[in-house]
Structures are given as C-alpha cells and as structure tokens.
Length: 333
Image 1 (tube, one colour):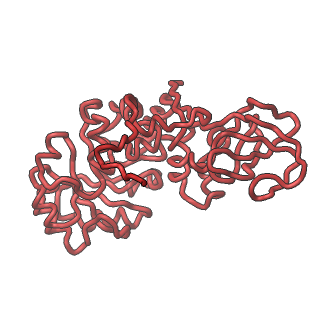
Image 2: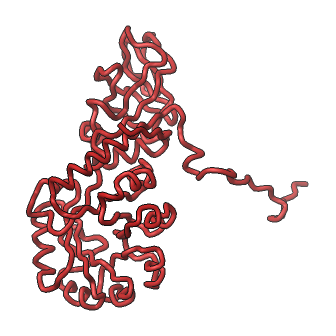
Image 3: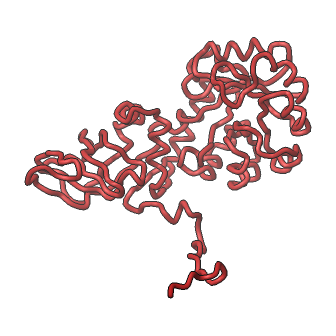
C-alpha cells in the first residue's frame, strides 16, 4: 500500500545558508568584468554635458551590474537615485549607503506615506487619489505624455499636483515632444521636471531640471566572456539544429544564462554564436583558436547596439540578459 506522507513529515530542501539565491546560481564560466572607474567617468561626462542634476537609474540591480557597487561609485555625482520598486532600494540600503534619496519610478507599493518617509524614498503617483494618499511623502507625479503606463492622464495633472503637493514631475520620454508636453502640462506649478533618459541626453531642450541616465552610464564599461572548453573539426551537421561549420568551439553558457545566437569576438576577431542550448553554446572557430581562449559576448568592439540588432530587442535587454547569471568581477581603471 502506498502511504502519502503528511505535510509535517515532508523534508523540504533547505535554502542556502549564505548568499542570495541569485548569487548561488551564477555561472562561474560566464565572467562579467565591470569597470567602475569607467562608469564614473561616463557619469562625470554626462553631468558636464547636461549641466543639470543627475538622477542615475540603478533599477534592476543597476542593470545586473550591482546596485551597491555602482551607486557607491557615483554617489557624490548624484542628486538622487532612481529605482523601479521601493524594495530594490530598501534591500540595498541605498539611501543610507549613499546619503541620497531614491525616487521610486514604479506604481506605489505602500499605502502609508510613513513607509516611504522612513526609508527616504520618494513615491511616484499616477492620479489624484494616490497623490492625496501619499501627500506627506512629497510624491513625484508621473505624467503620461505617450507611454500610457503608470502615469497620470493629462486632464488629471493639475488636480494631482495640487492634491499631492507635488514638487517633482516627470515623464518617460522617447522623443523630444514628450519632454515639451511635460513642461506644458506642469507649467502652472513650480516643480522639478525631468524627462531625459539615456536616449535624450544630447537634446538640450529635453534636459529640463534634471536627467535620468541609465544605459549611458554603463557604455563600454562591461565585458562578458566565456572560455572555449572544446574545439572540433566538422564531421558533418552538428548540434540540435544540424548547423555546418568547418571548425567550432563550445562554451558553457546558454539561454539559461541569457545568451542567444548572434555576434561574438574571439581574439578580437568577429565571430558567430552558431547555436545556443540550455547551458552551452557552439561558436564558429578558426584554426588558430584553442581551448581556453575567451569568447567575448559583450565588450571591446562588440557593443550592446550591435547585439540588440541581431537579437531584435533593445540594448537594455541585451545587457540585463547577459548579466543575469554571470559571475561579477569589479575593477577600477
């Protein structure tokens, strides 16, 4: 007779005693080198070029580069930091670590203003009701200028700004017209306005009273690579897909680690990822390549924009995907 164990008799696996779950599953064969010195120089250049306060975007664990390390490196250059969820800032102890407030760009997670005040967080509100509820926390108003997500409709902006006693208003702008619309909808009130993220930093009309650099901070500061562990001369169609190549190598990184088919570099030479499996991938190799050579998946002359074009996605998705399971190594050049 089969006996079904009672709930209390089940022996469930215990979580790791040290380190976060994400750290436990990082791939040691996928190396992520983050140049904090270059990130800082990028931010210094943005500050000098824009001439307005910076609100660096460190959401999603600073795009997978480590919110704590990145924020500490540029804290003195920032007026505040931007996250998407309050728990991101709280988990990283962001405001205590940097001495700066954090603007929570996403919809409200707490209904009590005191929860934001206690952690030195500025909530974002999207309508008059939310603005009234979180008034004590001096919320920022997100204005809908075209994104149509987590934002206040134009017709409700005046009421929401007054209801929340808002001193800050912003929009998620993808074009200059969105920044101009933000100014138009908030012109009746004295507020700090910001619209420009990385794509609009070069447009002076979009900088307003502050800018929110994200991807631009990390440009050329990241290298992701994995070593060749096997090399083979072709003996006909290979892999799951039956690809053909005179010579191919194998790396221990796959789609479980955010990798897709596309360009790569071997010894600085442009090459191709021929096929991607769950935890390994085939790369096109040449006679001079050998086991142990690094296959660069991002970095050097291979930038996020080129990979994004191959993957048919955004550069942000490329960076976050490839950093999701890589093992981090920091340097300061």
